[in-house]
Image (cartoon, rainbow over all chains, first blue to last red; front, side, top):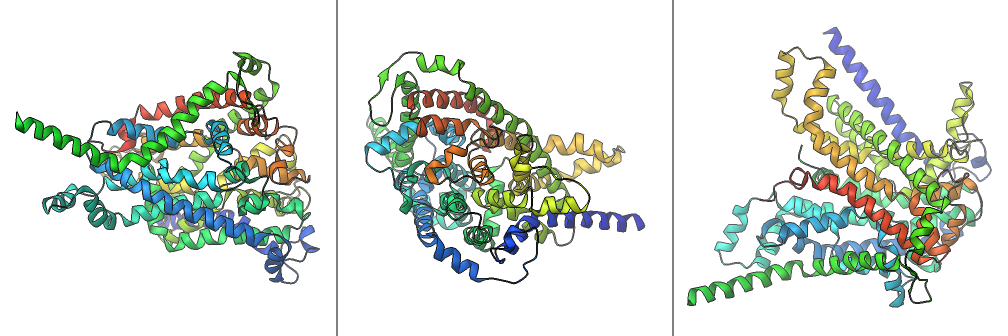
Length: 274
Length: 314
């Protein structure tokens, strides 16, 4: 009995200590975002006076609204386009029998594992020859062909749907597309939600892509790219950077809390069955 | 005879149906994998920039690779990160997951808190850490000073910049933790009971039951971790830019790459500089092809365990 209590206390002390360590950096950013510009230069941790107006100031002093709009357009359209091609491809890989299926699946995994820097130069030249550099289009349009990671994730989800449901639809005379849209998609909603969230987060957080294609055209910058240049445009105003930083993270956190279950399931699916 | 032709007609129909599902993805594989890979190899034997068409120069770019001091520095830094960051993240992710699976109360709350930093966009997380670890007035060094310890210069010190990046990566270990939590729960409970009957201690249970049970997930985490670290770009670029305090914006950010003293200068940063600041696209493709060879060999390690990785392919 005694020993069990000790273990209980030890486990929770450890867990609470870890929780404090994980939260501390975020709390620090939140506190800084409410400080005056004088105080953020000192080593004091707690705001002497609270200044929520920093958030409005961050919008007023920088093109934050523009960055936000670009980021929403990039992440939103990337997510929608990704689903159009990825869901059918994942279905064919998970539920249809055809020659070349395994080869294509391996090719998808290879693309997934390919560092983007490998194909950067030829693709940049390609987009430049079409006159699309300087915009976010080179990052959005490729998703018309689907996304390797999303296809992989969706395929992993779809194989878990029992064939009986599909066979029942086929016996009723439904074609493969009808079966996919009427039977599989409704059952695969959590998997589709997870894939959509991952794609949205990826685009929202992307720094390398916008840096590569939009550096020279500030009107196309996203939040990540804008934030990284923020400090230098406006000196060392950490309180404003902190406010903008939290605004960048906020939509991600809100989405996560709404879809936590689908998200955690998605993370688990990307791994292997132990 | 007629049934054979009917069957043939049906199999063609079948193929067209499959094609209608995979055509966009197949086109994508050709356009965004096949084409750029072949072109990258071709370009690596040419002199090419954004204005001029490629000009064949044979092995000149590849020979330059042998005499390029920057590639040695950059590859060294990237290998350092692979050797330290990947194992550190796996160990931390596993320990956090094991703790989480033991705790019986408020597990959901702990899981959310541990996972939250992994959601932070890399630029956001990097900015937070640079300000957290500011040498003079940052909260970490302020607290260390109260304990009578003189804190290091963190992102401003050539010795501490890479370890600071490792700390940043550990802060976002939540994604691996979730992966390990699920894997640990999949280890059959009977195996632990059997080990208990044999009188195994905690370490023996971990070594002979837990670890073999989760080894495919550990392999997966290692391979994806290595691949991810080979392309490590954003955090290194942003940390250097912000810590250096020099005026850099957008495209000009490459002027602070590697600060301080090249200690955070990773391989993808050098590839970016060669290609998009020096406009030497031929040599940039030498670096790209080399990166591809390394990443592909690491991926092979995982594909050899294809069935464990892909689940049932039937």
